Length: 389
Image (cartoon, rainbow, N blue to C red):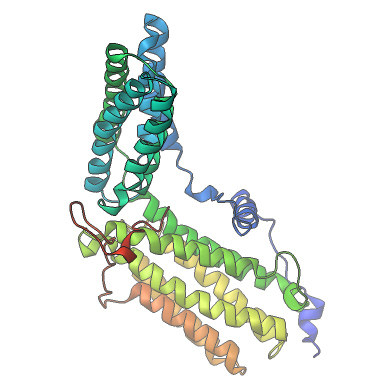
């Protein structure tokens, strides 16, 4: 099929990719190959807070020369790792459990291991087994159980008599307690930040997918023939949507108004993703004219960029977001009316519906809470409680 003359004479010009786009491209290449690198989810504030939490006990131990308190350094580090996504109340509860149970595990493992090699060989697996059973009783305790297992293994590697094991346990309690006070008192970080970043990551992945379709222009789609990165965008978007879907149930107990923007974004993301898959197929099969396919890809790219600008954060949206999205809905409707190919036109109709979902007033059902509750015996099929891990 011949492309329009004006398209042949004036091929689309594309700006050089930004640093953020290059990082997302690298992350996409790695994550679809089972390496969980997602640069847009990195939080420098958490790293700085962990550095302070670990650095102060380290400085105190080095200056005082009381090296028996070195476990406070380990405890502060592990406590920072134990901060998992969820509400502030659930984070406090799980972190308090880690401080208390970690102290008991550190003392028990170190003291029992001092009884002899055979006792140590039994104590380590026994403590690990007991800790990994916690998720069967406590919702969202996967990370807690993993870190307690680490504490048990390390404690068995430090066999100490009763009084020294007690000093080790007190050191652990002080280090973990200090990190707990820093995390939930002195240096708080919004617990909704992972949810907000996961939502923005979905839009970023969709934007990249639309941008690559736009960059194809009238040329052949690279997925016409199978290659190593076949369907890379589709897998990256699906992974981002699954991460968002795994985070939402962890905030199920919060007021509906706080989660509504993210729920709308999840629904709109699913609609846009389905439409982009259809448009991607149209590029592969060269359905309709190249001009119409390119126009649709540009509309998707522009609409997704407008989505990102309208919602810089999903917990505190801009007041102008409804007006901006309403203008884009009208623009997509006008462009759709000029298309002749039903498949391409249907893709723009889906984009229009997705933007309307972001802008709509209808109530979306709240996410279901994680299965299992503290003190309740779950069914056998409900043992995996936190799909985020």
